[in-house]
Length: 440
Image (cartoon, rainbow, N blue to C red; front, top):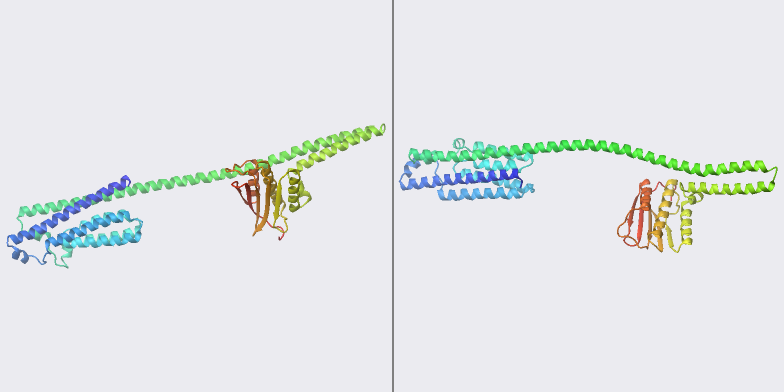
């Protein structure tokens, strides 16, 4: 319980103590007055001045305190059952009924017990509509549970009639004591409401500050998102620029060097062909070697953009060729199972699938020390499922190195997903939403 609720709880306890004292005081006055009347043989005169016959005092006192302690018990029980709304509504109705019982047995000479229930209601009911209904009900009961109003319709005995059997000084002392106790109860109630309203104002201010901070954070987050978007676009453009520069360098260094050598060799041949045919043939052989080497260098550069196998065949044949060549140069057995009838997709999709299979097989051999690799492809709705599993050493903790990062990047470029499992060997599972160019 936090401090602000603790203060309210203590004031509510104080109100309970004050009401206990008031009810004890009134019950004592009723019992002592009726006993005094019996002892002084003044019952006849007392009965002639009243229009309502009082209840048996001891029985009334017992009923008053049974109702009062039940009321306190309900307040405490409901405080612990706030989350159960239906139970709370029933307990609120029980509180109202017990208040009416207490007011009835004190002959409507005290209704301050209602203030205790009102203090409890305004604190515990969070729903404004429900709180308003109960607040109006208790307010009406408090206003109309006055002796002067009730006695107009129902015969009752007033507190003044009980005091009429005492001397003036004693009567004034009793009346003054009652008034002081009632005033203390009202002061405690007012203090309770002031603290409650102050706490609610602080809470509203705190919520307002949090909302302002949230709005400020949202604005900053929006600005940061815009900055991040601009940075992402700039980074992408820089990557494209770096790739273009790399390709330009490859072409410049490879093709430029080759063409320069060819040009110089041809010029030499033109110069010597009239003087020495043998020397010209020898020079042409050198030119041929330079040209072949240039072609190899150019192919090597182009292969970095697109696998050479896919240039000369489809994805199915390229995968089978890569797998067969891998088995020929290593002692690894690779089982390839493709359940897709026609493995033909768009160029970017074929490139990515080929590279993922290639990288996974390379990792299985190089890092996993695998002796058997299973490559499986199958179609599921619009998804192509790709699984590469090996019987290698596996790994408990998967660290995404250069190869795995490239696999993830390639799969994400196709809007797919990839998962790794290193518990039993190593397994790569990818799901790719294929733009099926042809019906499979």
